[in-house]
Length: 160
Image (cartoon, rainbow, N blue to C red; front, side):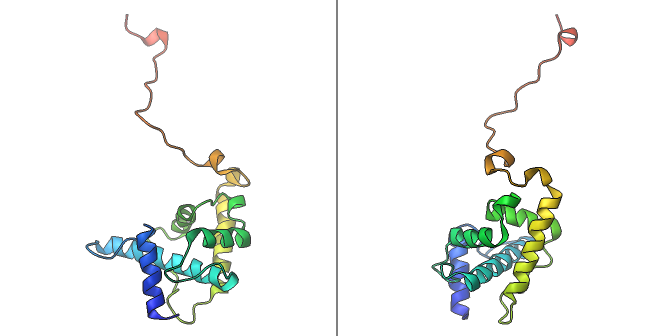
């Protein structure tokens, strides 16, 4: 891959709000943003190596990448329905965002990265066994508009 492909890919990720542009970010935010970028690039490179539908350039489509990863790793059976679910699982094993993959390197091993994602999926199932094989609406939070309802006091504690 060329530097221009990486730049186009990164631009696509920024335009789709998957990562932020690097301007005016704190060092901690930049580190987290770079962590996300490296993982997205690693997932995209792994998916592109196994599918002609996934490209790592300006024509990148997140849905195609997730579809390939789901087919390969059974993400939905493991209750990882979106890229944000994958990031949540990744953050659970790297909470400080200190260990991103070296996905920009020319010798990046996509097979090794896929193996690490397989382990992540297995860890996710082990950590949340009640979520395995459940549909998204059964295990993900939906919107809760408005304030929480007031819990009424039992009659014996109510003021007359």
